[in-house]
Image (cartoon, rainbow, N blue to C red; front, top):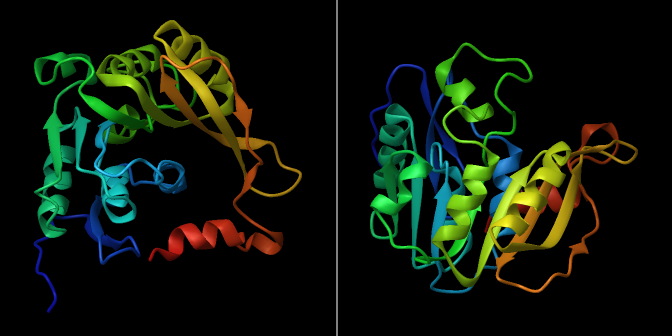
Length: 249
């Protein structure tokens, strides 16, 4: 029996291809991209019963995917845009994830109002990639806040995640390779040690367009660079690994 949902103007319901999960998106706002799918897949081996925090959750795409791919205990997403939070909450109810997925509508800078330090086993984040006053600025507020460090910068995201993580907790992030030095610097500063890095490349011969990072709270230094993840084979055909990610279960 099909579930009913009332969509607002410019909204659509997208099928995630896993356990009948779907997500509401606004076509005129910021819609999730492959980076969120890649990050959720990169973090899918988290331990059973983990308590997870998503910094800048947006529509809730990463927690929703993790609910479908893992045996997490509960996941909290924090998002500063009220209209996006409202949309994410409707997706949670549609997918009947109320028992394990909740949204806080606030800035990541205010997390200590809601949780004690070291409250989470895992932190995930797909933060804004661009420094303020850099790149092309979209006049759409939702897109601008999602792409540019306007309400919180990279250091804020790393610091917030580090404070919320338990000892030996895991921090997963997707970002642009051009910010890698900054990411490593802030992770070291707040004692989350980068342990695994994987570059995402469109196709053979291209430069990396994204980087996936796994860091561990209070871990010893040792970094493993995994083999590149290629999005496409020849003729813009998805690689087998990408097809497997999108195929679901």
